[in-house]
Amino acid sequence: MTAALPHKQEDGPLEPTGARRRLAHRRARFLLGALLAFIGLWLLWDFLVPLVWAVVLAVATWPAYRWLGQDRPAGPHGRVMAPLGMTLLVGLVLMVPLALVGAELARELPMLGRWLGSLEREGMPPPDWVAQLPLAGPYVASWWQSNLGDPLAATELFGRVDRSVLVGWTRNLGVQVLHRAADFVITLLALFFLYRGGKALIAELLAVTDAVFGRGGERIAEHMIVAIKATVNGLILVGLGEGALLGVAYALLGLPHPILLGAITGVAAAIPFAAPLIFSIGAIILFMQSGLLPAIILLAIGFLIVFVADHFVRPVLIGNATRLPFLWVLLGIFGGLQSFGLLGLFIGPAVLSSLMALWRELVPQPVRH
Image (cartoon, one colour):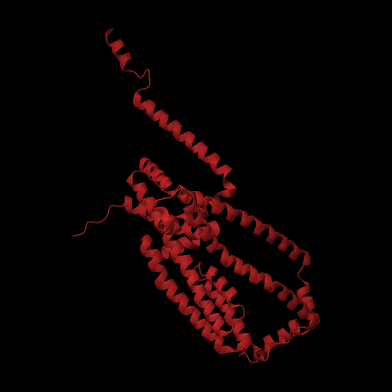
């Protein structure tokens, strides 16, 4: 009995074992890492959107960057000139369309102001074709004449707009433009450093995911990268193609300012089913200035282009690459757009693709005979 007591005390955990000490160290490192990550996110919160945009652009353009010189022998300034050149190229590709749209809008705003002034002074009688519309033609012509044809009624209608509200909106627009310009500069700066240290960063991320999640984590990260690339190709490139084709149609049919409308259509076409809103407005303008036939031709061309893009091109570029049904791709796009704005166009499909990859990792595949 007395001899068993020392043996029982020797078996008791008087000191932590090596395994428990290592477990305690891992927990402490995890808590410290979580705390530092929270503080880092809090510090960088206002810059997260431009930084994520830089990551999206780097992932989408990385093959082009490698082709331009990443894998070639670097000269004395290779580590600077190659990423700097690619960053400037991406900046030009993004800025040129925006500059064209901005210049076109700046040119049109004075004309819009003069048109509103003449409308308040002289009114705008209804065109002859308005009264010839079936069913509602006489009512539309009567309303038009009462509210727009009479200068006093037009002045009263447009006088309801508070000028101070317009001035405040213009000032807010200027502040937003400056804020977006600063975000754009941060995005390009981060993009430069991602190009410069991209290979080392990729190796470090793969090592971390392999250590934390195993081989499954690396495959999920690869799915996210593939999803971002496919979404950029399927949304941005296809949208720009739609805008270019419809811009040519605008010009051939005689629609005013076809370059501006084509650029707006290309931006809207990045969002599925948004382009029809733009070319439908163009069809209404054509109907008012040229008649019914050009408007019908524009609608037919627009819906044909959108049908081919949304039902054939985008499912191949996005669905096949991400191994997602196109319905889930659309849900990811719209859900991401609602939650994160334009950035969600790329985050949504990437998240759903990662979830699908994780699902395939966890669910055993059926045995094929």
